[in-house]
Structure formats: C-alpha cells, structure tokens
Image (cartoon, rainbow, N blue to C red; front, side, top):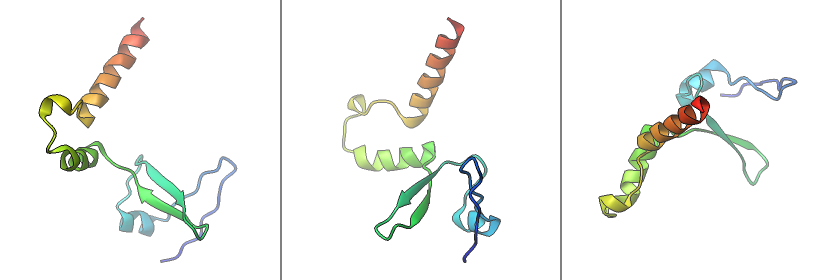
Length: 89
C-alpha cells in the first residue's frame, strides 16, 4: 500500500484509513516516529499500559515482588492522585 499525505502548517499529517486499519491504530493512540538508516520515517504503534505490563512481567518475573516497584496501572493512578492533590492546593 502506498498513500500520500500533506504536512499541515502545524506539522500534522493524516494516516490514510486503510493504513490505520492495517496497523490497528485507533483515535488518540500514541505512535512513535523513527528515522532509519535510509532516512525514511518509520511509524510504530505506542505501547498501552496492558502491553507494557505484559512485557514488564516477562522481564522481571524472577525478581521478588517486594523489589518490582509499581505496576503501570499503579503508577498511572499515583500520578493522577498527585496531580489532583497539586491542583487542589
């Protein structure tokens, strides 16, 4: 598949619907942009909290629970609570 997009004055581009569907992208999803050795832009999907936790669990499954730190969801909740606390001050 090959599609052409135009960069707007604000630097945004539109990814054609067939490409978004093929890549499984959804509205609001973060994507990563990388320049490869051939000076081409490579677009990759962002990582969801659930995906992060799956990868994290595989990496640290041999580490004792008390040394693992916060899960992705716990970190998200702690950040939200801290933001609310700062906002209410």
